Length: 129
Image (cartoon, rainbow, N blue to C red; front, side):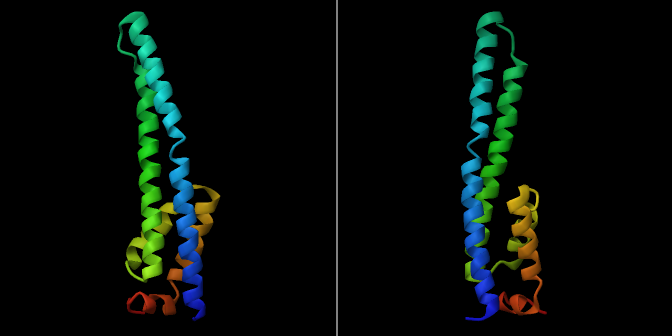
């Protein structure tokens, strides 16, 4: 096992951990969705008017929930592809996207980008050097 393979296996595990954390964190925006539904229901029952406040909470929570859910699944797929040594460009893009998700994502993304730019790693993925 070469050093490049060892580093890629570490990154595979880190991507899987980051993907699981992202999926778990994606459930927090559900609080906004349920709170928005509660607010909307109270506004509707009390005044029979269309409640924009409740819908804003629902919309905000839904967008964040779907974004985190998608990012978590894509991060898990990137971890799988690192282990398979395929889809170099997909892994590179997901590493960049993870740079927008807090300190763990920034560190994982930067070190993954550095590792993927090494000539030996490009050869493992079948990319020209």
